[in-house]
Length: 179
Length: 143
Image 1: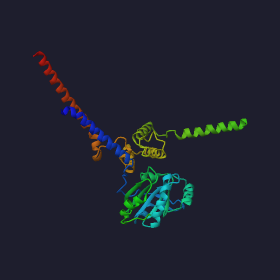
Image 2: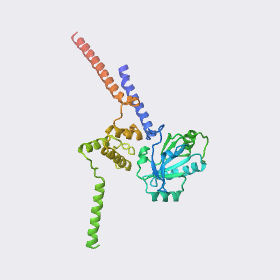
Image 3: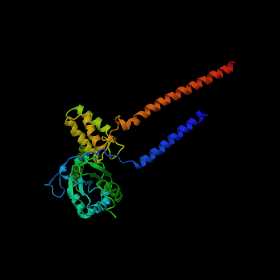
Image 4: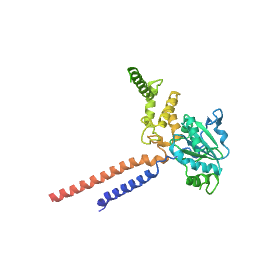
């Protein structure tokens, strides 16, 4: 009796494993970042609009800020743009734009067209710093706390929900900044 | 189109295709040993954008950049371990096609061994049962 039921049991078990696996694969194509809980990677890079000004990453640390990797070739960045504008209007934290692997002229034209919500834009033209941040898509955003530690990473576009549920609580704020 | 413009066009085409061929040429190393290490590392490391391709096969811009990083680290004399650590620190264990043996990957490594062992035990019992039944049948036949 048991030996008859065993194959059916094994089959059912495999079926459940398959179903769970498919479900997980469906939601989890995102990779967890190994950088969460670690100090933000260091960099010294020029500003996009004033190349003679070199920004040292250490100088940014002190208050929480958001590092937003974007580029003019990134379509999703356009979708995200109004959300960043709303966040900027609320003025709850500094937003540092990291323009990466982009032509400065294209980037400037993009800002002219869609508006510039950033407190400063750093130019990572060859993408070295984006590699240090483990960026593999665009946009990606990193929330850095007052001590310079990365506390949250958003892969893909920021949404009002992500800001409300993930970002604001981590900088000690409640509620919503976006409508 | 006169003959001159035709020749120019053909020449331009040749130059252009030549340039793209050059762009895909493998980088130049100091020694064959370094080149072998580059080949091995780029096949062992996953391209995070394309997820199911390794760095050697992928043409994604990120893969190109990472190949460049690896090239520079090799020529700068960094070890394979240092290069892998560099990538894991940034992109996580996912970049390694051969996951390391550690706490959170224990199940990954243990399951095949457990399954193999379980299979062996199952085969042992099935064979023993069958032998017993055959022996019984033989006894019935002779008895």
